[in-house]
Amino acid sequence: MSTESKKRINYFYDHIIGSFNHGSGHPMKPLRVRMTHNLVMKYGLYKRMEIFRPRPGTIEELTQFHTDDYINFLSRVTADNVDTCIKDCIKFNVGDDCPAFDGLLEYCRRAAGGSLEGAARINNGLCDIAVNWAGGLHHAKKQEASGFCYVNDIVIAILELLRFHQRVLYIDIDIHHGDGVEEAFYTTDRVMTLSFHNFGEYFPGTGDINDIGIGKGKYYAVNFPLREGIDDESYKSVFEPVVTRTIEWYQPEVIVLQCGADSLSGDRLGCFNLSSKGHAHCVRFVKKFNIPMLVLGGGGYTVRNVSRAWAYETGVIVGQEIGPELPPRSEHDYFEYFGHDNKIDVLSSNMENKNTREYLEKITLKVFENLDRSRHTPSVQLQEIPGKNYNFDEHSDDDNLDERVPRRLRDKHIVPDNEYYDSSDEECTFKIPIPNEYGPSRYVRSYRHKLIKNSQK
Image (cartoon, rainbow, N blue to C red; front, side):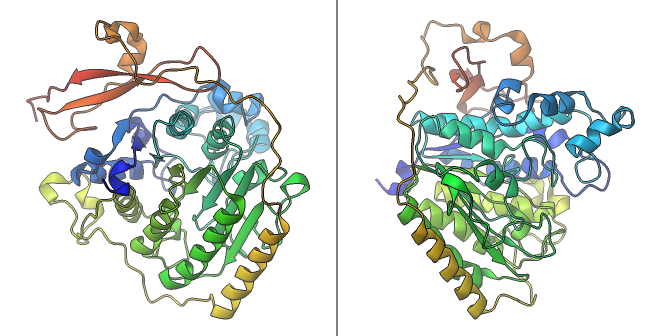
């Protein structure tokens, strides 16, 4: 049996994510996650992984990182009452780039749910790779929204991973610096952050090569500032050696990979020139190290490119090549978004690459020097690793599991036909989340359910 077929892939998707709207004209379109999932299903990638509908993150889970007053504010603010709480909006940076919209906290909870669920299943050895394209919101701060991000699901998921693992490596290939994640772990050696990003007069303006962490975290923040127009070949020339040296030196037990798609060519807010295959090469390369991995989404504002790239990368993760054609119009729910472009590939343009070989070599050398200054193994307080206090898949054959799940919870997980399957006769395993009574870690129970397709079109 090949290594590919041995990998256990868990994929997390909440169809409600695609229903939220940041407001007219706002670049962030949660619909891109639903478009990605549609392609994943149409290409049959679900056959090589388990699909989970995650429980939304709880307030308790979100406040493991964020402050209580900030999360409480997100629960109260709406598009209708935003004018009555201007002082708090300024305090928490809600408005303009991070507008208040209906269901704001619910959106945040659902986006974070898949990241938390993936971390929990990795912790318990139930999967090798967990995927949540709705996550990866790397700009959110402890008590402040930033860069279209309100709740930092990455930090919360890493905190969950640290309960069971000594060292976590965070890799960020979004065009924007992963400032929220770096800031959260800037003083610790338990997490190493590695960000490849555009640097200069560009949001958020952080991520200089000399930003390396402080205290115990000194040299455990790694930044690779890039210039506009970087292409596949140049990106690969620095990504491979830097990631290899970082993994060899740090020896992480888990990797969290943020796959922001705004580093693709032609992104509405981006200025890089990566093709979808060049972007996906990063996923393929990190996967080869055979280290448990949590794969997340992130930025990406040309939705037709984002969905194609993440669908293609899902194929990379499960070991199945897809394309080159998009699914036929008759089978493709979002065909109109792609216009006349019926290919899965996002191609590079003739944009000028301002990253010279000399510049890239200089930055690479500086990164290596910083890595050599860090200790090989981080300091970890001696403590008992939390026991396995929840079951994911165990239940009695005699149990009526539908009755053991509250009606309110069941109603919240009714989904449209073909959302998780493409055959009326297929027997699938669904995962119903149950609130955890034993602490911050998550657990879910499974039940077998014969799917019956609605005969009406």
